[in-house]
Length: 321
Image (cartoon, rainbow, N blue to C red; front, side):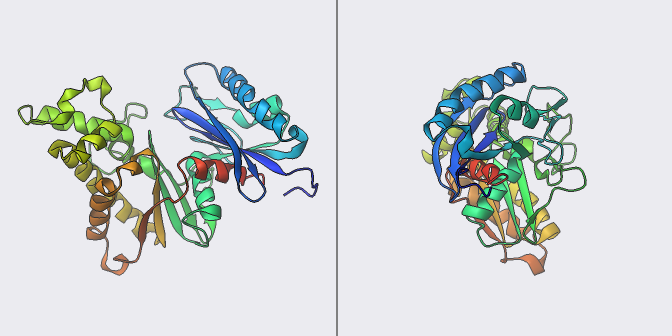
């Protein structure tokens, strides 16, 4: 915290592939106001900065203007903690290297620090959530993509270049499903994200065209992970199979991650966790089944107890608070 008693607040920004959430956070870690805008990265980044400023300015003024703030913390896909740049983010349309922290600093007149979006969420969990007091844990965000943050010995793993811990891009199926944005085949993200669940549902429906399913009531472009969950709740067999298949792959991958860093816990959050036991049970079963004996029944697998997006907003604000 700044020594000045005037600096009571920070802004936390969680820039996601689809939408960007932001909040004003006080020094005790309370989010006192928050909002969201579409990320709309098909437009120039300047448009995004303008819209972000237009939404945040009234919130900033309500608590006393920029002089009441110590700075802005931001989590973004491929956000480099060392440079303040978003670099070659697969799920954003902004190409190449985007000096986002510099652009935000210029617009808002506040020091801006950047980190990877999943690392911001992990910091939020460590300070305020399910990982409070833990020194070894992994967070996995199951959203539009699969993000991850790895903490070992109380320190975020960022690696030599700031990009360590991209577990969503590890290959889990040899010559598997194509990741259209990166060109890789069979990475975790194409199976265990909300996008992956939708794709699995489409494939399962095509594989068994005569099998009845509530999912067939929807046009292909309408299908989403939420619809798959709603159909599973109503007892639809194909929908339940989609979650079993997804959990199987996710659990195998988590077993690999456990054997790498031996964490106390793996904390899952993001939109897909709304599927509750439909995703948790097959994931936990597959994880335990694939663990080397010495690791079995040691690692807690839990859903985040922070409201979705709050973890990332809090973690981002912790960069400057």
